[in-house]
Image (spheres, helix red, strand yellow):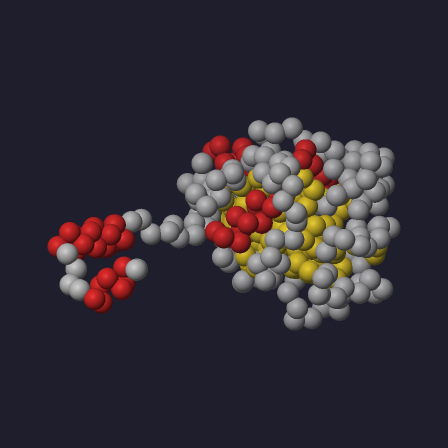
Length: 302
């Protein structure tokens, strides 16, 4: 006989009433689930903010992230591939930043041992020789063609979204792994492998967020963490990880910015002073639109 049956057949014993009051008190005093703690943003420039984000206890195996949030209406994304720019060897991300003049640079998707890009790669509307990957279905795109009212940058899920290659729908494109789709499904397997990761996301307002983990994490863990604790994010894709995971913010953004409470050590993290940099064959850079209609003007070649 269940508790409800007992309650309907006879008045509860005084000890039962005390027990019920005890459980009600526990419910009232029990801590409520933590609300999602999204980053506290620091303004670097119009349309550009930064943060060091620490996910809450729902992500126990996830360390902090460097995060840059970009308004594509004010900033332009540009793809760069070392061979297309006449270089014999891939530069490091710091060298890429100096050459390109971009204020922010991050690593693109995966590549082979011979530095050939794995997946679609377009710059200025021209394919850089790579082919569509049949399994990876994340595609970062920027600069719709012809220019129209579409968002200036975003993520396509090739499982359902269409991308025409000839002519391309966007001037800039880089294919990699789909991580989190619009339905909240995590699109990578749970392998247990952990590495530094670079993730590109799109939020409900059409902003692009670039995240770089400061610790070793699994891609599946990142996808779950973003889904559970970062509700404004609608899509996420993973770029290359491991030692290739890199994000660099030019010192000029800190020096020319407004008076700020940004911790000095955060600036060092965004400037990459705490990690070693390896050569990167492909990067994506961003520069303010009001300063340049396209990619930032490259620095003179040495």
